[in-house]
Image (cartoon, rainbow, N blue to C red; front, side, top):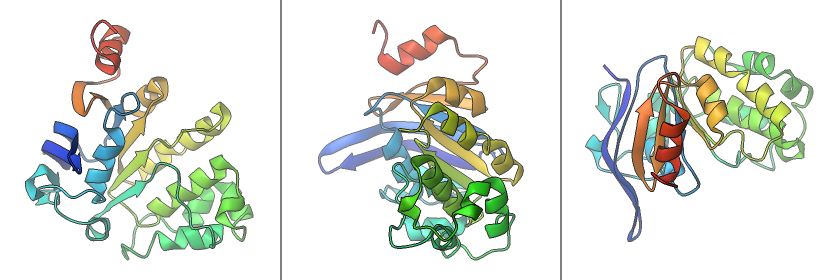
Length: 235
């Protein structure tokens, strides 16, 4: 049975419809990637899953519980955390304070604590007293990931974590993914970088104009399949 599912998921911003009947599923211990061009609906999907956008209850199910109408602060305690696009650190807080905030919403004993976050990203231990916004873009992304992990999530949503970062920094950040998987978390990774998505995902969904246009394992999808699903047939 799927751990997290959407069924016929729609989403609106006022009169504008951004998602049209999106069906995805995430199995326990699995990593799925959501790919697609700008405006495909990827971030709207993540905002819906995390409770930032509210939906009908039955449209999203987490471990058998209908959560589509729940708010973000109700969903975090159930074990779902998001690394938002743009990192969104608290500028007045230190690195360590930003990390500790992640534990407030879900006070359970789990794999992740400060010591293990610092082991995952050693540079953060060195910079623990620095303001979060004084770090490089890549280091800020590590803080954002660490902050989400501090809630010991069962599902970690990662929205464009490579955006705007140098290739060497992206490599270092994605090197943490196997360690995160080993902790027991399932992941949904939103990526514009198709190659990077294919490296980390068990399965891939492609979106275009608010709809899922392709789904499969990285091994089963050809370059032509992805091109057609990403840009539209004949693009």
